[in-house]
Amino acid sequence: MAEQPTNSWEKYQNTIEQFIQVISKNMNLYGVTPSIGRLYGVLYFAEEPMTLDDMREALEMSKTSMSTGVRALSDMKMVEPSFKKGVRKDLYKSEEDWYKSFTSLFGSRWRHHTETNIEEADEAIYELTKIKEQTTDAELIEKIEVDIDRLQYAQDYYRWLMRFIHVVESGEIFEFVPKIEQEKTNRNK
Image 1 (cartoon, rainbow, N blue to C red):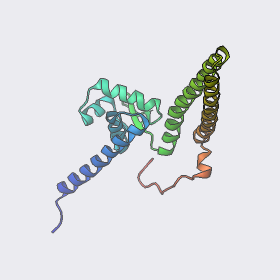
Image 2 (tube, one colour; image 1 turned 180 degrees about the horizontal axis):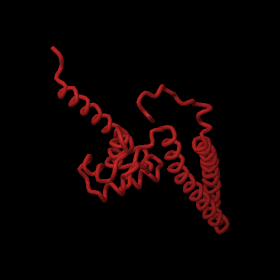
Image 3 (cartoon, helix red, strand yellow; image 1 turned 60 degrees about the horizontal axis):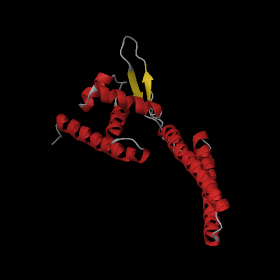
């Protein structure tokens, strides 16, 4: 006996919704809230670009929340404005190149934190050096010298990490770890 069409559509919707939930949870790795992750998932599976009203209706959230979410996703280069003749409202669509989104998001997030860590290590070395110059305590001087070596090691690591971030941001990473290309069926029509 053939399955009822409405039952198939319901199963389809449930399957897509489950995957959107996975996207939502995993976006936390990139500092993205689950609601913004859900918004991205809805846009990713949308057949057409969506307005803020469309998004609000699909996610049952406020228009303000949708606007904030779209702005955050846009800043991360995961959503982009779209145009459709005859539509006066702003339209948005997801960036479907996840490799591009990852390199942009990874680079900006890691660059900020790594630069901060380098600055903090510089500051700690500066302060420890001042303390070392002002003390006569041999044990403290020895401890400071060991800790300055540790901080310089940390700086070397952060400088290496900045080089790695550059390799990701520039796309050079794909020379070492190539993208997996699949034949696009109904995408990017």
